[in-house]
Image 1 (tube, rainbow, N blue to C red):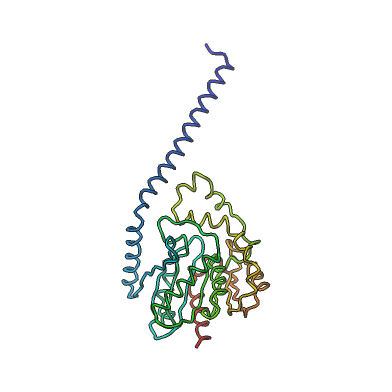
Image 2: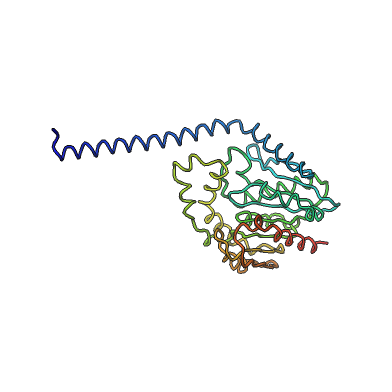
Length: 312
């Protein structure tokens, strides 16, 4: 018969062994799932082509001729974007830039909106790292801005004419849209910022961002969320790096932000007012949060149409 102390030790050892076995099973399952995902995504060329084809067909079903275009930045880096030509003859082009996480297709409602289509061409960009099955994070805001410039240049070649671009950036797409103005002063006529994440000091790491960075959770995330998680970890530093550049912007700007934004603090509006030397007008939404472009798209449509009138 075992002594009580020895029995306790044996029990503890058994429990520890069972716990270690359970943890290993969880880790093994997670890594197995991640490995299976890798195998599935290794054929991303074909699967992404199918994705784009499917998206074009979905637009066609709504009687909208949308084309997915691809622009090479270099031998290893490219950017994808959705394009819809205007219903009228015009050189105005609206360019949507999504946040993190996000996708070019997030703005499908706007690409299908007849009121906007009568005012100009509409583009929606899959930011670097997104729009591919094996995405990776690019923390440099100037690099993202360079990719938007490439899209603009590609579109002018397609249209065979210079365009008046109106950039529309939501969330983390806001600073990217704004920085693009520094490189294309003669191309961008207006800048529209929708709940933009502009201030490095107002970029807190939320609990779910920290949770997503844990080894086990991160290993099973889809590529777009991995990119967003990695991007979030570098947001504050990336914004701080270019903070002094905002005063150089001369593009007329409209900023729209909701007071009930729980993701990107409303105080970003004060930051922009302080750092902007360009003409700036603001729209304050008393009852809206961060995703008002998708819950209340009519707000954005009105801002776009009002801005378009100023170019006529």
